[in-house]
Length: 245
Image (cartoon, one colour):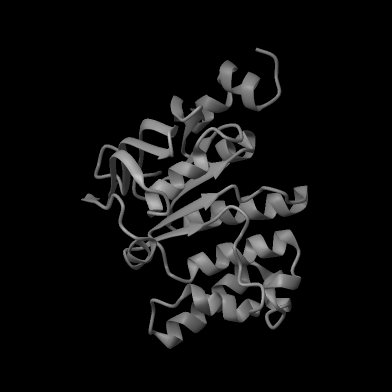
C-alpha cells in the first residue's frame, strides 16, 4: 500500500501555472505524489501534461505557484540540480544518445555517481528488466527500434537511482506488445519503492497500473482520486476510454 499523501508528499504542486508567451498552458493546478505512490496524470494531447513536467523539472519557467520536492521549494531549480536530489525524467520522444552504444547511454545515466561496482550492478539490473537491451548492449542507440529506445531511456533514468521518476508518454508510438512490456516495467519499478508520476494519453493502461490519478483538460485538473474509481467514472470512460456517456 502507498503511503497516504497527507504524510509529507514527496512531490507537491501548489497552484502551479506555466505559460508560453501569452498562452496559459497550465492554469494554477494542485497535485501531490506521496512517497512510494504511482500517480498518473491523464488527458488529451495539448491538455498541458508535458508542460507540467517541464515546469517541475525547471525546463520551462513557472509563471506562479510552487513546486515542492521532499518538503523543499525547488521552483525553477535547474534540471541537473534536481537529478542530484533524486528526481529523474524520461522525456517524451525518448531522447537517447543515438551515436552512443546502449552501455554508454546507461553509463551517462549514472554520471552523478562514482561507485563503479554499484554502477556495474545497476547496469545488470537494467539488463534484467530489459533482456533485449542486454542482447544489443554494444549496438548504437540510434539503430534501435522505438520500443527499444523507450526501454533504454527508462533504464538510463534508473541508473541515477531516482527517488522520484517522471515518465512522459512512455507508450507513445509503440506497438501494443511493447506498450505492455513498458507498463509491466513501470509496475515493477513502482513495487521496488520508486515514487512515480506517469504522464500518459492511454488512460486505461495508466489508471490500471496507478494508485491514484488526475485528469487534465485545457491546463486545469478536472478530476482526481483513486485510480480504480476514475477507471469506472462515466466522464472518464466517455472522454478517454471511447465509451458512450
